[in-house]
Picture 1 (cartoon, rainbow, N blue to C red):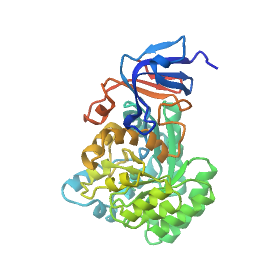
Picture 2: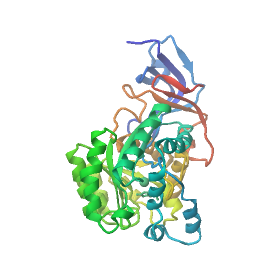
Picture 3: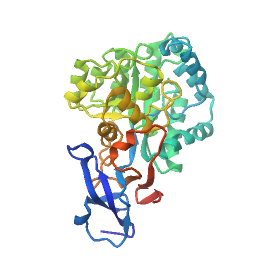
Picture 4: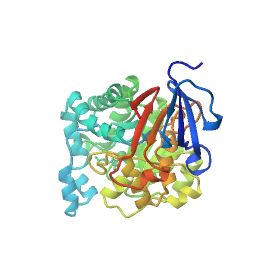
Length: 404
Ligand code: DI6
Ligand code: FE
C-alpha cells in the first residue's frame, strides 16, 4: 500500500545490475520506491502513477554500493611500514619481524572503544561519500576475547551514527598474537572455545573469516575455526591464496564459504572448487597494488567457470589503506583486467552475494531502496577516473542521505 514515502524517481538511465546483460541497463527508466523497498522499476513509459515524482535529470542510477571487505576499525597506523616497504622490506619479512598485523594489535588493544569509533568514522565517511550504503567490517586486530568483542561492538556502533548497514565478520583467526607465538594450538583453542562463542552469544558477528597463509594460519588450523563456526551456525569466508597457494580456498569451498578473498595464487582446482560451491571470488586490488604483487588472480579462469567476482577496498592500515571503493574499481580494471561492467557488478550484486545478502545489490522490485544518482553519461564512467567522485545524490531506505 503506497504511503507518504512513496515516490517515483524518473528520467534516469538505470544500471539495474540485474539479468544477464552488462549493467542490466534500462534507458529512460523510472523507479517507484515505497519506504525501505523498491516496489517497481522499468521504463518511464510503463511507470505506475504516483503523486510524488522526482526528475533525475537524465542521470545514471545504480544500486547503493557495497564494500564487502574492510578492516576499517583499528588503532594506530602503519605509515612507518609503508616507508620500510618502499625501501625494500617485504610484507612477509615485516610480519615475521613482529610488525604487520601484530603491531596494529598492540595499538588496538590499547585504544578505548570511543577512540576506535572516533578514528573509524572518517574512514567510513570516505566510503559513504562515494555512494556506499553497506559496508562489511572485520575484527582481527584484537586477537584476545575482550578486544575482538570491543572491535565488533565498535563496528556495529558505526551503523547507529551513520546511514549505512554494517555487516560484521569475526576475524580472530587473523594471526597469532605474541603471547601465543609458541603455542599455536592454544590460540586456536582460545578462538574456537572462548572468543567465537562469546562473539556469537553477543550476536556481534554475521560471519567468521580467517587468514590462511604462511605468515598466518595453516589450512588445518583454519578448518578448526570453520568447524567451530558451523556449530554456531555462522557462515564462513576466507582470506585465501593471497601470497601463496596453501589450498585454503578448496577447504573454504568444502565448508560452503560465502567468499574467498584476495586469491592471487588460486589454481584451477581452486577455481573449480569455488565454482561448484557457489562461493564468490572477492578481488582486493588495493593489497596487490600496495604490496607491489606480481601474481594476478586467475580472472579468465574465474570467468570461464562463471564464478561471481566481487571487488572491495580491503581498507586496512597495512596492506591496503585504500579509502575509496571507486579507486578499487579502477584498480581492478587497470591491474586485474576486469571490465567496467564487471567491477560495477563487483561492488553491487556480487558484493551482496559475498555477504550472503539477497535483499540488495540490484534495482529490482522487492530489493532495498538503496540508490545512487551519478553525474555521468554512462555507468562505465564510474571506474574510469581516479580521485574523482561523481555522486549527485544518495537515497537510502526511504530517505535522501544526499538530496538531489
Ligand atoms: N590480508 C591482508 O591483506 C590484510 N589481512 C589479511 O589477512 C592485512 C592486514 C594488515 O596488514 O594489517
Ligand atoms: Fe583483508
